[in-house]
Length: 403
Image (cartoon, rainbow, N blue to C red; front, top):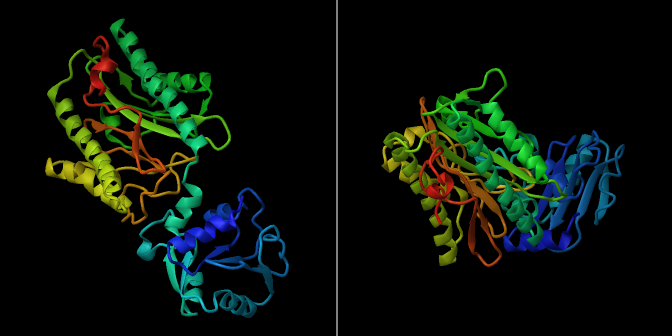
């Protein structure tokens, strides 16, 4: 539901004159969500909706499709000819200097860039400075309320328990002299989710040996790997409660099918764990000092640990992503690799911290979720794995996890 007072309060907080929301045939899903239009037919004509920091909003719609913004407050102007559209946009922006749009300079953030270059040129032609709406979008797309935080914690109990299911199946099968396929472990995890009321957009990653070195590996029946004694295994899983507005828990752990873990795996994972902990500390330190922190800084913190260990070339993934009702949400990512993430790490948002070292023989990753509460306290969910799990050892999970 569109919340005009909240939007205008945010505009004043970020010292913006207004927010110009534009859509053409559903091209700007972020604008449609902010306006409460998500799920409605998108139509075939362009509309603009301008929200000033103070005062009434204004609409600009096409004569053939004049109704898409009827439920929203503000005066409405109608255009037919393209000249009238340009004049109408000029009218919306008259007297404005700094205006937010779904734009990111120099292709810096594809998650926010939903407005085409021609519209940007038109707006700039009226002497307006365009500012990315990335942090505004976060406040209406990525901020969790108390119920969502509680649902995350409930989901996290089930996702954490899923590792017992996965590694337990491997242990039982191998200890009995057999093997288990990646897709069998995957199916066991999915059954566990369904039994506990969780849903997910896609099955988890279960990768053995070289497959663990592919950050986005997808096991497929008939092409999946066989897990046997002496193998390194990565399990990356994500799910949320099957309820309205539920948010995801997204976690990764690694194990070795044996009673003791070879040094090559332990040494690599120790670097990954140190990078994870440094990234978490970076966020905690910033909030403790009362300073703003941007997503790229968190990535730098984790990446620096791995680079100083001489493994920087093998860290081929960003440090983390926003988490929301979609596992990859529309808030700030922890990224200075694929994008220079300048969005702020805001209170009431959640994100993954998942550094990794990926090679041709195996890949090690540790993934936890971080939530910043309204008071600026930084919570870590999913448990901190400090050692590679020795899957065949007694009490293996307790052995590898920090108390």
